[in-house]
Amino acid sequence: AQKVTQAQTEISVVEKEDVTLDCVYETRDTTYYLFWYKQPPSGELVFLIRRNSFDEQNEISGRYSWNFQKSTSSFNFTITASQVVDSAVYFCALKVGFGNEKLTFGTGTRLTIIP
Amino acid sequence: GAVVSQHPSWVICKSGTSVKIECRSLDFQATTMFWYRQFPKQSLMLMATSNEGSKATYEQGVEKDKFLINHASLTLSTLTVTSAHPEDSSFYICSARAGGRTGGDNSPLHFGNGTRLTVT
Image 1 (spheres, rainbow over the protein chains, first blue to last red):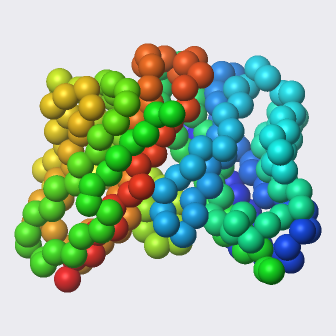
Image 2 (image 1 turned 90 degrees about the vertical axis):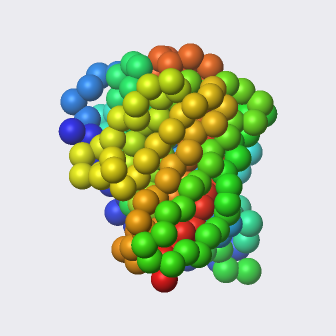
């Protein structure tokens, strides 16, 4: 069975501070995919990143960066120089194998950026 | 880019009535769509996988007779909550992916805007 743990339920930081959202996953599959989604107050899920289990290279996209560590089964997400618009609930998700589209979501981290 | 449209955005209905939610892929064909449910301040839980032209696959614990899914075309899947009860009040969100069925496809899953259902 798969499991995604986002231990941080809520985080508040002052604008312009950096913040890291933690994600720890569990799976016995060697082929899997990890995702981060952003859910603003409006409710829609916005895709941020997808990473497969064979690619441990960290990624940076503007103020966003992701640190994938297979040794610790973690896929952490860092926002640099946070902005008020970053306020949202962020979900980490896991998909295993090929031909399987089921996403297992973590419980989400509610991030509030204080102006 | 690929867009998934969900309608309605919100609906209020009386207990005992049925509600239909539509999920459309606007600029791509989706042989498979997914229906999730999200309770307030909780995570998304997969309810069922909607397959075009065949029966939906339901997750354990989801009543197939209560949550009817129809995927009649490559761009439309519908979820009907039958005989709704207050405990069915939730945020329902669908997703679809452009491209093939394999997990190796680089296309990300796209989610609709969700439907907030309130049963009174």
